[in-house]
Length: 410
Ligand SMILES: Cc1ncc(COP(=O)(O)O)c(C=O)c1O
Image (tube, rainbow, N blue to C red; front, top):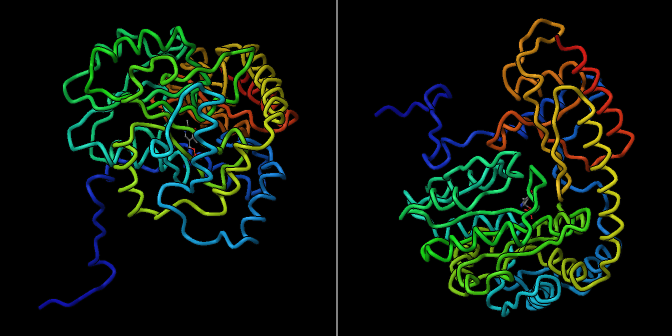
């Protein structure tokens, strides 16, 4: 018997379900930008998917009090009764949707909510419709669940929003879910009631198709945009809608890892089965903090939104002043998704021809010390995403550098 176990004899064999999923482009660019920074290059990174504000003090205090009160043990599997009650009240107060406590689930971030939902419902060969540009985790999670993402391009002219005819054409007997995200990461596009209506009418005709809506950026909307969620707009569909939300973006709590959802009881129960073998429960301390976030004062959200809006206006105006770039005004979130078709085909000072948005972003990083993410990472080219959750001074400097870099192209 050969009992050799030399390093060269050991071949790591990943599971098929993850073999087609690479490390995300966003992480790769982030790692490269950080490496350049460590070398001493003055890189400005506009890639972060999190608010630059701190978690408000009253929320931190609630966490501290929970620890002092001994709330440091496992909790109920998919959320404490206190947090579920706060979520029920939030859905009712802010969204006009009534969920019972057993129609609510809490997880370690909205990402885990999505993961639980897909793992609990998808079989190999099932299809999930995802409009692009999309938050990359949607398709990766669907693939980990061994189902097939069906990506539908939604261009800038359509406001980066899925159209009813596209949805109708994409539905097959294998379609299990449609995932919609408003306001969107990466495009910032928001669906108004009149944008949702034709899509919900299509879904009414296809009872096997469920709708997952990701409302993560609901509180970060501009110019009086009226946020709506489909379960409120079409109560007849509520029994096949999963309404996903979380405290990460609204309350600047990305590191606390709490996401939640409201949905039909049977789905919520099945999601708990997945969660029970993944994490047992979300962090007890973070759940206590989230109760304070949802039940506490909400006035600071307005100030923070105004601050984001100033930065959105600065970045959109700066980008549109640059020859070759074309940026739609986003309704929400803290991202711009700008077209860069006008710079493709041009040549950099070092003689490289820019063929794709990935080339353009590599050029910006190398020559202008600005890290942004190409549209290809989000399934739609030629675009690039800027996260403007950074200081205004940094944004101004980045815009100047991008403008100079574009002016140097021939
Ligand atoms: C659209 C969208 N949904 C969900 C999430 C995940 O949030 P969480 O921190 O709750 O996992 C993100 C985070 O970037 C996001 O952009």
